[in-house]
Length: 140
Length: 493
Picture: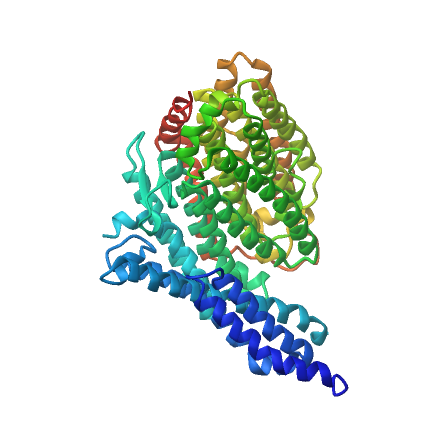
């Protein structure tokens, strides 16, 4: 890997930017185009690029498979948890209005949390698929 | 408070239990959670069945957005009837699963296995309960994707090819359904099923509507595994883990038939679906071919699991035959057989799973002499087989009775005859197993085999008892199915 100097330097430069852009797409999703799914894919693209340039082992040191597995489940649970909470607060499933005194604020909070759940699950699932394929040869 | 939320809890509880299973990480814990959730889903389904008024419905607006803008869950009697089938099979199969899964699936995959099974259950329940055509497609994909994963976990390496084959065929079917739904949305501007049903008649024989209809029927028939679109089914059932085969045989194709009924009768209306397009004749011919060809092929199978898979294709033929008669009796027969076939096939596949658990295989030669070694398991298998044939006092007899009745009512006596021939073919393939298990001795030198453990026998016998019960007391099946059949045909213009 030592001879790919250009690749390594450029990757180091742009990976943080990709991550930042993913976060922008994630949290600006309720004002502009974007949202959890797109953000999750972009976020995992940064991590996959890291794995491609610096090797699977370093990527798995940064984001261990166990963490991927746990986050994958937690994202879905966050989504569903928001729905359950809205039910406990007296609304229907995923009825965000009940989260705040003002319905608009409630909708804002609700969609933000749900999209965060989507983002977490999508990015870790993409990563899990990549790990599964990339790890096949190493396992042999 | 919980009562008004029952429709959404039906889907959300299994859906959220799936990631929890993954987090629990340990096989037994995940199994415990999954089983508890399975029984909870059955409780919800039964209370929904109890609370839906005849001819009425329960509606639930997701996110508080009223239909037709938001997605709504809508439970009428047909929905609650199919929900009970799916949830009952799910609960019993999950109760049975622990030992069988421990034997057939690698330890580190147990948690993921139960997560996938719960996702599949949630998807199937979601398909039935939703009142939104696109939401139906989403749930279809949830259940299909998880079932591809479940099938691929089979011990035999051929499970991978079987799963891949199903993936291709299933994706084709799902794509066709999506195209159909998209075309409907294009001409009506709505995805809500009731709204669609209201707007479609005004469009008449619009070309786009006709194209949507064709795409939907072909796509759904792929999922149903209607002959000749059944090619994915035998391999998928034969190589999947025993638990998965029993679960899918009892639920997946049944739910696909529900989707067909929903689209043909509720959304398009029987008047549109069966006039001028020869759909009735087409379904009738394919269903009869399915019954005869698949039953005949089943006779020549050496793998009993595969034999039962072909028998499933034949049984699907009976159900579709009932639908194709487009009469109250015909639909009643189809709906009754929907329930009865789920119960009998789940019993048969679970009994076979117990054989695999003890003997290690489900080929005919593995079953030699098992009648003595595993009397209770084999007795359950025979009882399930009798029901499959349609012997009086079993559930199978009731469905065949109504089917023959419907055929005679329509003046199609040759069909009644073909149904009886199908039953005779079933006698032949069930007899092959009985003969091997009871008349032939265990091969010399074969390891001693003991009876299956009680926690496997209990769900199997629960299903066997249900088989006999439904053959004697038909209030649950015929009572509800008759009412639903009238509703489905009465809703037609």
